[in-house]
Length: 135
Ligand code: FES
Figure (spheres, rainbow, N blue to C red):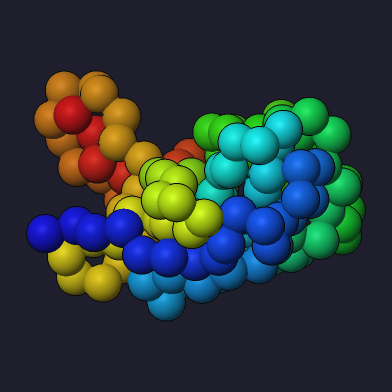
């Protein structure tokens, strides 16, 4: 059964800032956008730049290595040189804790997309990153 696990306290990440956290064995970049928390893979899909160290402007983060841009609310790639999105993870706030959803197998639970019930994995579908449950 999937469960949420604590990755940080809300006061550890100020608005407009990011923090590197871990859940389910993955490095995750946790962002605070005006009090709303968002979690995406930390590694840029270009050549692995640390997105937690990128500049955040609104909901857009710029990779510190070569300047690719991503939407932290969806993981979508917004600008080159990265050509694929990063995974986005479900987040909830419990009291003062920020929690990320982890699947029963211990992996982080990825975004679910409703596209008719076919499970896909990014390793087989380069246009996506991470395992995505498509409904
Ligand atoms: S590693 Fe992120 S843009 Fe190159």
